Structures are given as C-alpha cells and as structure tokens.
Image (cartoon, rainbow, N blue to C red; front, top):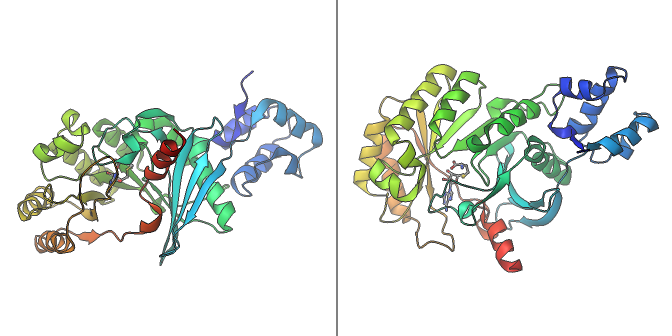
Length: 344
Ligand code: SAH
C-alpha cells in the first residue's frame, strides 16, 4: 500500500484519513505538521502511541534534507540545495529585505519551458513537486533559521503554472489560518506566460501577485529566447494579464532580464513602454545572470539606468532588481546544475 502524503492534505482530508479517531486528532496533527513543522511522528507528544504506530505504518511525512547550504558574505542571502524523498534535488533561496525575510522556492525538478538564458531548464524536466515538497522548502528553511519567513516567491526551479493543481493546493495549505497562515498578499507567482492557466488563476481571485517573465518588447525578440512565446504571442499574454488585473484588482509585475546588445536598446524600451501603456503594472529590470551554458552578457550599468529612465519617462512604474547573493550563485537553477555536473 502506498503511504499517504499527510503534508499535502487539507484539514478535511486529514479528518477523512483519521476517520474513526476523535475529531480533534486531525486538528492536532495539522498543528504538528503546519505550525510546529514537526518531521517525526514519534515526537508528536499529544497523540496516543497507537495512533503514532498507525501513522508510521500508513503515512509518510515529507521533509527535505539539507544537501548544501551557502551563506553570502556580502548580504546574508542563504541558498539551500534540498534533497527530496526520492533523492532528487531542488534549490531555495532566502533573502533579507528591510521588510523581513523572503524565500524563493522551486515548484518542479527541472523545467520544460526551454528559455535560452535559464539554468533550470538546461538539463530538462524530471518531475513535478508535490504540494508537500513545495511547502517543505519553506518549513525546512524556517526551522533551520529559527525564524518565520513572511514572504514567498515561486521563482525557483520550474514553471509553477505547469504544475497547476499541486501549486494551487500548496497555496491553500501555506495560507491555512490554522496552519502556517501566510497572507497570499505576501506571495508572488512567476510564470513564463502559460496563458490558459493565467485565465484559470484569475478566476480564483487569490490575491497573490502575478509576475510575468516578459524579457522582450515584441515577439520577434521573445521568440528567440522563450519557446512559450511561439505558442502564445505577446499580445495574447498581455490580454490575459489585463484580464487578471480586472478580475483581481492586483497589478501585474513584469520581469525583464536585460541582455547586452539583445533586448536593452532605447528602441526596445520605447516599444515596451508603448505596449504596456495604460496597464496597471510594474516592471522589474534584472541585468541577466550570466550562466555557464550561454554567452549572454549583462547590460552595462548605464544601459540599465537609461532603459529604466525611458520607461519611467513614459509613465511605466519600473525598478531595477538588487543583485543578492552574487557570491553564491543565488540565481536559481545554478546550484543544482553545478552539483549534478560535479557528480557526473
Ligand atoms: N518559470 C517561471 C519561474 C521560474 S524562473 C518563470 O519563467 O517566470 C524565475 C525568473 O528568473 C523568471 O523571470 C526567469 O525568466 C528568470 N531567469 C531565469 N534565468 C535567468 C537569468 N540567467 N538571468 C536573469 N533572470 C533569469
């Protein structure tokens, strides 16, 4: 019999799993899992021994082993390489901001999307993460740091909307009031632009921030780096974003990685501004992270500043992302890649 993944269960599902036990047991168990973040049944001291044996026999407690932990000497950014129960690895990064700690987590092992600048996709796709495995990254980091992490971004390895059902369940669990109780206002989900799923997500009106990886002002440039753009042209993507804004009242964030001589010209900035005109949005500029597999180079500082200034002049709210953890290859996907390469 396959063991049941308790950490992926909602409170009603736990109740059903514990059918025959007093009702409050499900609450106690949920509290052990999602408030105390306990990773061993034997330490759940208010449960009767008989129930603990039953759980050990029939259920699985998903938790992640720390395979590597790197701490940036520059800004305290912490990067984890976590091992999943089946031996696969994912990365999570904890950043320190003025408003507190924020964690960037993975949703898949590898990625299918094939963006040419991204380390996460280079070795292909292995599998989706279960809801428990997405959650456990936050829980493991909180336990390790001894501190609550109040902000979460789904911007690690994988495409969250390509693992839609598990990600939605994760959102329900991470925000459960009787559990981890994260406000979804403090969570961002980043997507390369799976348009059909953006519409689905809009209908849920969850209050999270949608962050869309644009990286280009038009399809001609976008098609060269992001295969998803061949399936959903930019106009359809922007239409879906407008719909998301209308439905949820939340502004959308656009990610734009600046690649020297490719998408960082004055012309590109003006074209981007024209296309985003009138949208309730925010543009986040990121000088591209240089990864081993490509010869893309970051834009010069001045080019970044000029690009931002042009967007601002055209009325588009724009910031430049601070580079954190540059000494520990904090951009997601790189640590897993490097470790796989080391062991090959
Ligand atoms: N699949 C999702 C989330 C994971 S990637 C997405 O595409 O949005 C998180 C962000 O990092 C995305 O904006 C992605 O385009 C960006 N990214 C990937 N590789 C990068 C690199 N080398 N430099 C800068 N940003 C990169």
